Length: 255
Image 1 (cartoon, rainbow, N blue to C red):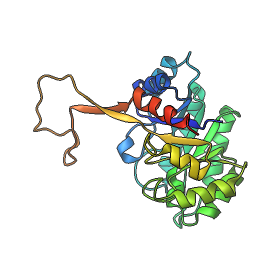
Image 2 (image 1 turned 45 degrees about the horizontal axis):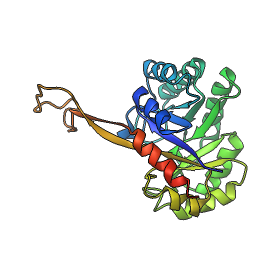
Image 3 (image 1 turned 60 degrees about the horizontal axis):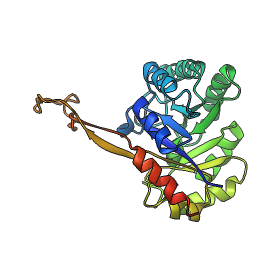
């Protein structure tokens, strides 16, 4: 059986490209350079409407900011409000992860957020995101996340990318068995997914498959940065590439 491909989408346009390339599911995020933050209501509604007839499953990340996964009371309230609002809109899944100051899975807070999601839609899918990759003990974290009732874990194997984390990924897939899905992500692409699938035996994979699109602006004041001291290319954006998604499925045909 061919693995499920989840595309990390940064916009409604990326969601459409994911559909056109053959993907079954997306994780909709804002601020991907920060590791992903919660998308706006408007972007989510637009993505849902644009893909309504496609069968695409739309998951959304619940993350109020970049940085670590230890949240303040105000941030927790924001996360709960976002979960209620986005699940009420009809998203298929929500994605989050919270840790304690000691680097362990925060059982109490994650349980509260799980209840928040399930109280709106008992069938909503839940993913523990790459907070897992900075947890102190990955095997204990695995068991804790299973106990909380999550459907899957997104992980690079606690390394900078899945290639370097492949040893732990293999161990996690074996330990998890049928209790939870281990979904490798971070650095998965059309050049390595075939070998990664053979090595890990994972049933789902997470990747962005983006390409850079040049702005159509004719007049450009390149002296000004919208990020102030953070300088980025203001006149191009990265969006999901239909062709790169298709290339992934072409590689998986060989399995």
